[in-house]
Amino acid sequence: MSRFWSPVVHDLTPYVPGEQPKLANLVKLNTNENPYPPSPRVQAAIHAELGQDADRLKLYPDPTGSQLKDAVGRHFGVPPEWVFVGNSSDEVLAHAFQALLKHDKPLLFPDITYSFYPVYCGLYGIDFETIALSEEFAIRVDDYLARGAANIGGVIFPNPNAPTGRLLSLDEIARLAAALPDAPIVVDEAYIDFGGLDVIPTAVTLVRQHPNILVTQTLSKSRSLAGLRVGFAIGQPELIEALTRVKDSFNSYPLDRLALVGASAAMDDEAWFQQTRRQVIASRNALSAGLAALGFEVLPSAANFVFARHPDRDAVALAAALRARSIIVRHFKAARIDQFLRITVGTEAQCELLLEALKEIVA
Image 1 (cartoon, helix red, strand yellow):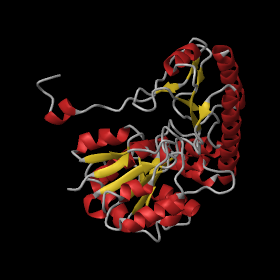
Image 2 (image 1 turned 180 degrees about the horizontal axis):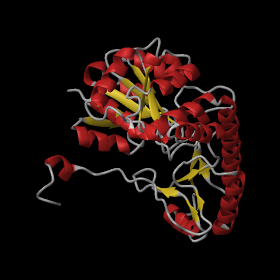
Image 3 (image 1 turned 90 degrees about the vertical axis):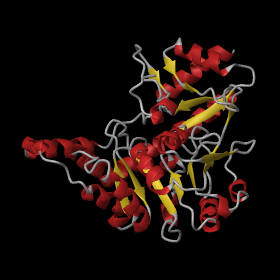
Image 4 (image 1 turned 180 degrees about the vertical axis):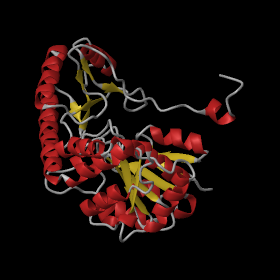
């Protein structure tokens, strides 16, 4: 505590990011990073940007991010005016909390979800209520609607949810949006690209019919650009303008020149994107089966991680035993999930090392 702090800072409980340990021969399965490299076009685009004229770095980048908006629009088949880009999806979400989710009525989100949401509420003074997941850790739309449209300022949830990995169907998202036409519905799709092999069930397909839906995504996961920090949102212009007004009152140049060209190249390389996400999905399915064979309960996952617990082994002890073998997974202390481990899907070799270690530990 400090006498120089504002009252807001005194009351904040900051988000705790995943550990970035420095261990020899580390198998890092705790922060949901993609185990595969980004598209080769990313490095080529960055080199080309620098190679043309390094002096360009003395100039501000495009404040609108038009090149990236065009690439995102091409990928999803939406006008670039329906796209907002920012410095990671966390920044995009922060702008959404301030621009769209701060109302007299409370914001609703799941009781087990991305732990940044209550942090943003504290930062921006947003009243919120949490809605309990089902016994199977699923989001139930009826539990939200039971609050009554007149009592809801907005709704936000990850899809797939984090850290559970469970997916809410597009039909249910559409039903929620239709029942709450005056409330913004923010669908945080950080992991949506791992939702299925053939069809990616993104809520972007709903934004034309539902002007209250805003979809956020990141290039950190499925496009292997966690180190570049790029995210975006898609929605109708009324929502995008709100985000832009907040952005331009906070930081008019959120994405640097290298991030803009690298992210645009990643969005345009569809073949690489499909190849690497399919590898992750195949590894996730194999990992889930391997954990189940060892006696773990594994929630159905549509993300690049699995959420699992063992009926006879304490989660903290399991995480410590894995760490002793230089394998890092993530444990959450929150109620209802304190016996679960969230395990990032690594390469096939990393997943095999994890399963072999767990086989020894639980034997």
